[in-house]
Structure formats: structure tokens, C-alpha cells
Amino acid sequence: MTIMRKLLTSAVASAMMVGGAQAEISDNTVKIGYLADMSGTYRGLAGPNGLAALKMAVADFGGKVDGAKIEIVTADDRNSPDVASTTVRRWVENDNVDMVAGLVASSVTIAATKVLEESNKLGLVNGSAASSITNEHCTPNHIHYAYDTYPLANGTAGAIVKEGGKTWYILTADYAFGHSMENDVTAVVEKNGGEVVGSIRHPFPTPDFSSFILQAQASGADVIALANAGADTTNAITTAAEFGVTQAGQTIAGLVVFLNDVHALGAEVAQGLQLTTGWYWDLNDETRAWSDRFMEETGDRPTMVHAGIYSSTMQYLNAIEATGSDDSQTVRKQMMDTPINDMFATNGRIREDGRMIHDMYLAEVKTPEESSSEWDLYKIVRTIPADEAFRPLADSNCKLVSSQ
Image 1 (cartoon, helix red, strand yellow):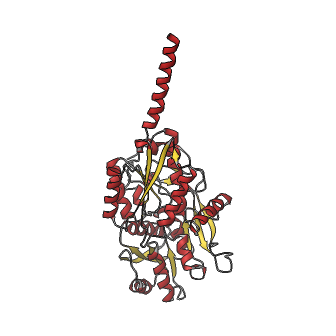
Image 2: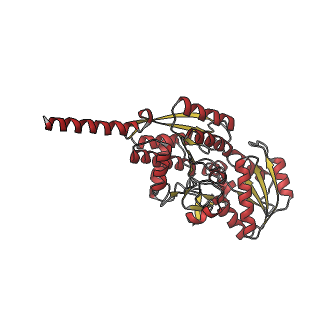
Image 3: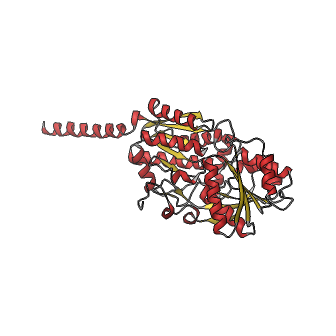
């Protein structure tokens, strides 16, 4: 009788442990919301291909984590902060969404992460560029993964100034990301002995850059810098080519340029353009193997944003599996405690401000003669080590940084 009682007690305890582990995952479901521009200016930045990368991660994880099914819901944010905040609030309050991925336009991201902080859910930011997202706009409820304006400015602007581009004129997208990039670039240019002689802000998005390019051209600056992204960048570069800006001796600096942008422009137009990227599909055997799978799914080579979405989602799901919980703070801590070594980064790590730091790369667009195929577009000029690439914590205004 005593032995039977011990066996029953042990069985009940085991059942409670199993049940407790399952109960840690809310609704026995991990629900991910994918929020991005699916139809507008930033469609190519993340958009449908970013969703494909997210689905690849879920599929590679087996569709379940710690016994709980993984579900994905999606929405087009239409590059509107109001749409973003309304969507995220509905997701967390009505649909039990645990994590929001994608997050492209920085104004959208800032609006969304405020709601995530209020509701204590998690956001994994890959599309947004503004370095303020883990600086003055940091929260304990989001991680900024792939890149931001700080290393882009350090890499591209620093290199161009050192190569003789001393005077700069900046075309800036008139919202959080553009302002952040303009500030970061100005600091880098001045630090390296250059001068910003003028700037102009354009609406987001802008279909016609004629007047803005003419004003920049008239400034006589050595370098016309484009503190914008997506279709705005390609439109501005195309307009500059039509006006013969580079033929007249000025340099166009695309500060936030992605592989899909260069592919759309073609090597003939973009050749010689220097840019900074957090990842490139043709870096090594591992990046090529994953990129081949992505291309089979989408017909395109992935950008650093698409790769970041896959990598961060895998890190998120690994953290849930390791902790048996989808609680945002439990998962975030586990992600911070785990070095990132995968197809995206080597020895990457997530800091207390939510910034994932990893090596960045200064790249140059190949000439048509150097390019062996339509996606063979970059040659890597140099690697920028993680600790040099991103804003030092000593310079941070983030409320989460312990020295504050």
C-alpha cells in the first residue's frame, strides 16, 4: 500500500510538472504577428519576402515549440504609425499574439513598441533603421536585430570622407528614421574632418525627386547623401543619373541601400556605389546554402532584413524551448544570455539596450564586367567588427543601460 501510494504521488507530481511546463506557454500556442509594409514604398525591404523568411524559420523549427503549435498572423501597416499601434493593440488584446516581427518604417516601429511595452509583449525589429530605437526609444520589450543608422553612417560616410568627399549635402526622409540618419551622418562626417554644407527634408514617400536633386546639385557639395530608403532611394538615384550628377563630378552616397535596391537599379547604374550592410547572401557557404533555399521559395536573393527575420525568429523559438515559457521577459533574458552563431552572425550578442551587435561589412557594387550573374552584385571591401560598428553603451541614452 505504501509503495502504491508513493507511485501515485510520483505520477501526480510528474503530471503536474508536465502540465506546469505546458501552462508556461499561453494558450498552448506561440502566436507571431508579422507587421510590415506589404504594398508600398518599403515592400521590397521586408514585405512578402520577409514573411517567407519567417515561415521558413517556423517550418525549420517543426511548426511547434515545446509541444505548443506556432501560428502566424499578418497585417499591412501601410507605413502608418496609427495603423501599427491599432493593429498591435488588437493583436495582443484580442488575438493573444506573443511576438511581433517585421517592423520596417521607424515611425511605425516606435508606435508599435510603445504598445508592446504597455502590454508586456515582445517585438523583434529587423526592417527599421533608426538607431534611436535602442537609444532614446528603447524599451524592455523589443530587440533591434539586423542593422541601424549608426553603423551605416560609420561605415559608408566614414569611408567616403577618408577617400576625399569632404563637403556633404543630405537629402533626408522627413520622419524618425531620416532624422536619425541625418544626425548620425553629420556626426561621422564632422568627426572625420568633413563638413555638411546643407540639407533638405522630403516627404515620405516622394515619387518625384527632381526639385530635391536640383537643390542638392546646386549646393556644389562633393557628396550628395541620401538619408532615405526603399523606393525613395532608388527614385533619387535614378533622378540623379538623369540629371548627370555623377558625370558632373559629385558622388551619390546611398546611406541605406539594400540588395533589392541595387538589383532594381542594375550594376550599370549602381556600379561603384559604396554601402554598409549587416549581411550578404554570398559571404560564405552557410549564407549561400540558406540563400539558395530562400530563392527557391521566393525567386529572389535575400537582403540582410530577410536574413535577420529568419535568424531572430529562430533565436526567439530557441529561447522559448530552452525556458519552456513564452513570457516576454523570460524569453528576452534567454536571448540576451545566448550568443548568436548561425547563418546571420558569428558571436553576435544582444545588449541590455536591446541592440543585437554583430560584424558589419563595407561593400562596393561591382561593375557589370565583374558581376557573374544578376545577383552577384557586391564585393566586400572590409569587415567592421561588432564593437566598432554599433553605438557604444557609454554613449547611450537608453533607460535600460545600467550606467544611467
